[in-house]
Amino acid sequence: MPGAIHAEGLVKTFGDVRALDGVDLDVPTGTVLGLLGPNGAGKTTAVRVLTTLLQPDSGTAHVAGIDVLKRPNEVRRSIGLSGQFAAVDEYLTGRENLQMVGQLYQLSARVAKIRALELLERFHLADAADRPAKTYSGGMRRRLDLAAALVVSPPVMFMDEPTTGLDPRNRQQLWEVIEELVSGGTTLLLTTQYLEEADRLAHDICVIDHGKVIARGTSDQLKARTGGERVEVVVQDRDLLATATEVMTGFAKGEAKVERQMRRITVPVTGGAKLLAEVIRELDTRGIGIDDIGLRRPTLDDVFLSLTGHAAEEADSDEETPGGSGPDAATGTGTGTGTGNGNETEEAAR
Ligand SMILES: Nc1ncnc2c1ncn2[C@@H]1O[C@H](COP(=O)(O)OP(=O)(O)OP(=O)(O)O)[C@@H](O)[C@H]1O
Ligand SMILES: [Mg+2]
Image (cartoon, rainbow, N blue to C red; front, side, top):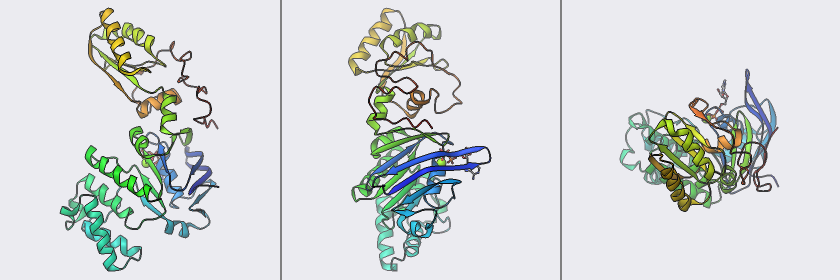
């Protein structure tokens, strides 16, 4: 049975740009799909098509079982959208903005008022409730916009980069609100540039790049594919980078990433803290001084590097990925098709 959000073969071009290049999506009812991708990947375009704001060149989409292209008005009644750029009325206060949305959704004035107050408190805007939104900080506007998307509880929600621009505390609070929402049965499609966010919130993740789905899976599956943890070392002496890279490659389960300018080497590993101690010993034995060393989880950049062979931000031309360690790595984290993990992650090479 198709999910609450279901799309097949979506294509949307803007001149020469194929913003969506044959995207298939399926989000089972009551689950969260994280649509993960760098700037320009096509995330907002996908959200706009699915929320009836943009007509695709080809493909089909159903939301809450309703055909997005044939019955857009009905779809609009079943969804909530929080766009990438906050859509609040600058001249109304926070409270008025939320009450207005309630009334647009035909709540009675009394219910709209109660709902507005609840949301203002939940999003820590109660103190600023009666100030015009134009006096709000960026993070406050973002929160007001999200609150507006939650005035009524539609069965299907879309959030386009809901936490971009929020500080860590507000991000954390928003994650809690989203988790609550989903535990109440809402289906959510969320776009993000943060693997950590998709990791925390999404049941399934779709990684897109240049309008194409390049990988799908749960966050654990993607991380396994990306090689799990990383050891990151900053060496003191840039001249010893090559030697240090050689040492690190000996411990690696995939390709080393070298950022010459930063004097930093990052390699995917398994083995955690114990391995970290071994790396430190080996670097010491070879006389390589280190400024910093640590274990960290893969970032979106790491996912991209292992899925596409290029970093999420192409502008980081400072990076090199020396060969020699990738293809024979046991976990199959190199580029190409080997996942080493059965069909956990699906390569969508179309
Ligand atoms: N209305 C438009 N006219 C022309 N080009 C567009 C339009 N909308 C999107 N694009 C192009 O389509 C591609 C995908 O854009 P989109 O906004 O979907 O990316 P995104 O993944 O949301 O990126 P970001 O993380 O920066 O928000 C980009 O190359 C963008 O420049
Ligand atoms: Mg966008």
